[in-house]
Length: 307
Ligand SMILES: [Mg+2]
Image 1: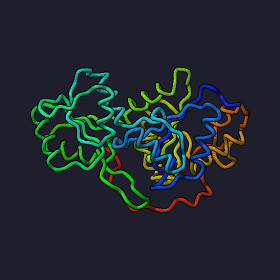
Image 2 (image 1 turned 90 degrees about the horizontal axis):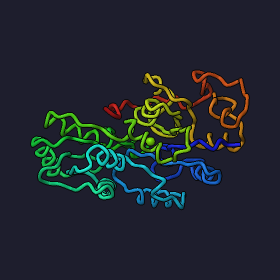
Image 3 (image 1 turned 180 degrees about the vertical axis):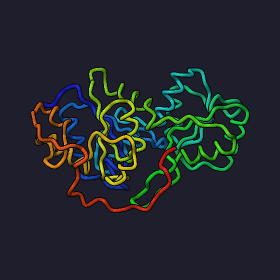
Image 4 (image 1 turned 45 degrees about the horizontal axis):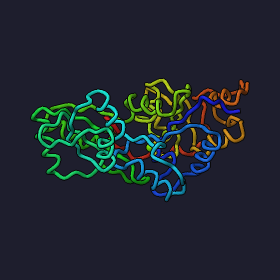
């Protein structure tokens, strides 16, 4: 029997889909959570799309009937942060529809003259907008960044510059440091946890990025499952002080374990054994996982993903 107090925060790119196709088990995992009334929220650092945009994207990829309640973006997190900490503030924002709609929903006005904050999100700004942002920061506006990603994966070997890189430009030109929302800021995880519901005492984050998904979850004190279906190889995890609670090949593996009620026989699974109230004492320590993995290929070195 599944515990009723469990909820999932799930990263999207590299966990649910990659490029323009669903990853194995993604649809079935969403169906499983729905059938068993397990609350879940997709948690993304991409501040460009609106929740409705994301629902349409997943529908086209093959997961229908998601609504805006199923998503929490770094743009929404930034709007929540400003409306909580500075209710009557105004902003000059550089970003896409996801950012402007998040501000509209919290009634945070756009201000081209004397904004309290310049907010930088994901997108492709013109040099004119960056110059304007520079000018406003020079006049006293504070720099807020929706997410710290310096680059974002576009495909298996392709990346694009992220909001963190745009913020670095403004930090260099103004000498002012930005404040970064989104993952791994625990504020993102704490807000998303609230949205899962009051009765959810056990929250599990599933993600593919150590610097954002895993770090933020560990710092908030929730469980962090790393999947190797995205931007991180098992070898990469050795570069970090913090470590995931579990490592999985992909979300399909979690689905199999939940459906069968049996922890995988080749990976440690304290979570599954407690979830299904089993008394499996033969779980191996985390360090011995993936002895048989063939995924230890070396990747070309990239700049740090986040600051
Ligand atoms: Mg990801």
